[in-house]
Length: 276
Image 1 (cartoon, rainbow, N blue to C red):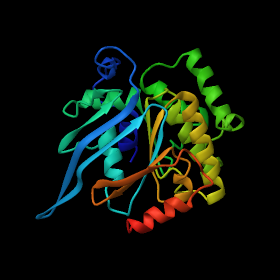
Image 2 (cartoon, one colour; image 1 turned 45 degrees about the vertical axis):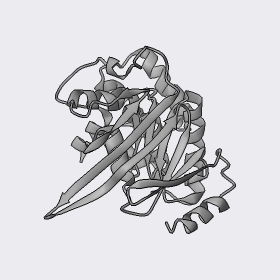
Image 3 (cartoon, rainbow, N blue to C red; image 1 turned 135 degrees about the horizontal axis):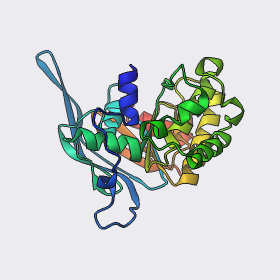
Image 4 (spheres, one colour; image 1 turned 120 degrees about the horizontal axis):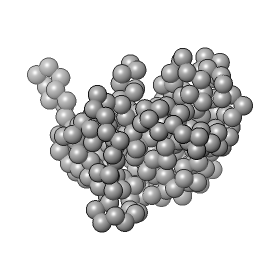
């Protein structure tokens, strides 16, 4: 379990601190945090080949929060895994900050997760033997970049997410909502270009979920970080700037929400009309 989790944070048997492959082609800042084009992914199940992603395309602008909604089995988690390089698509391209991900290179995929992507898991995936502060500092420890300046950044981020008073506590001493706030801080501490959130409110009650969404939106906007979030909750999807609807391996529709979290009726109506 933790081998898979540490891989998602950017660990590898190959060590390389150079993340320059993610610079834009001409050295200019990109306005697109994520660009996915014509992504395909199949799985072999016995004698049957199951097509999960069938030419999916999606973009996320810098600082934009995009929610993906769709039925179970429609390819939501597969999409996140392919974007992060945990899984490798059969064809299609993924670009972060206008630079195409090199799926053939394990080192490139490791550095992608280490420097450019933060991941928020539904089940938190905190290391039980590490304190809150140590869990948040894990990306710096893995990249061997733990400095006094980084420690100050950790303190600031823990204060932003409201966990600065719990920094010396262990995961077993925290509630589910508190553990997710720590997970959010860990995903953002290295200032990634893109955050991937897989059901970030799926393991907490609705009231705590609303608080988590408020903090996630506020913090990522402050850092100008793009967010691609998978959720089944219309209420929590309403915090997004844009909602995309995934069905049978492709994006079938989308609309602008502009973070109007008190307006959910249009989301319900769209889900009904798409039979999702």
